[in-house]
Picture 1 (cartoon, rainbow, N blue to C red):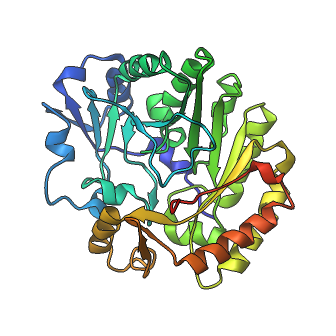
Picture 2 (picture 1 turned 135 degrees about the vertical axis):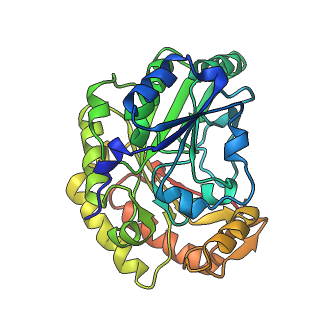
Length: 340
């Protein structure tokens, strides 16, 4: 079984620090934790993160950390390829860029040229930006769109800070999506029905082959079950559904594990979506990862989004929906349709 437990002491051997954030509290805390790391002063994070001719793959094997201040916008309209769960005002926040996990199909590999991680230490400025938006209308916000916040909680504490902020803003609902195993976060924050913890659920075969460094299926399910026990709303995301030769057996076996660990009647909801990726991103992924069966799959380009053929997509998703309808009410099942 695969485990991400060693990641809580992930050795960032090199840490780049913008001059403007060197004296900020979070910066000092991170540097104290990684006291043996080489600290490199920089003027702006883009001088490192946006350099040309970087190797995403090589950098992922030994990631550097970049501590920076976000001086632009950090809240953006939700992408059409993502599920809005029926909310009218759907956004995502970018407080960290890139992830310590290494999923073969990750869209971040197509979005960014660098495999290093940027942490914007001025989260309070994002909160101020969000408060201005909340003054106009309620907001549904995905806060772990560009990273896995829970996996980096020991480094940043952002999950707890987002939970506290949301609890104090009644018109805000957030989703924190993860592939992590850790449970301790649920002992340190108070439950709030507007702080949704969403677990990406994949078969063991997919996790072991294509979701490197992430928690095993049973670990994710055990963490989700613990969150529910503590009173947190939990969403299971069967997304992305990945095609493999024996996909039906793999996914139906996965549901045996789900039923073993999860009281499905207690779930807030579930989502289903086949793998899809913007055309610009898959172009870069195919160039950088020529041996990846997921990146090189002969997808269809529908409206600028690369997807499985409509027939294959329908077959896979219909199979999962049929199974899920025996576990949760139909109205709790959300299905992605980027062709609409």
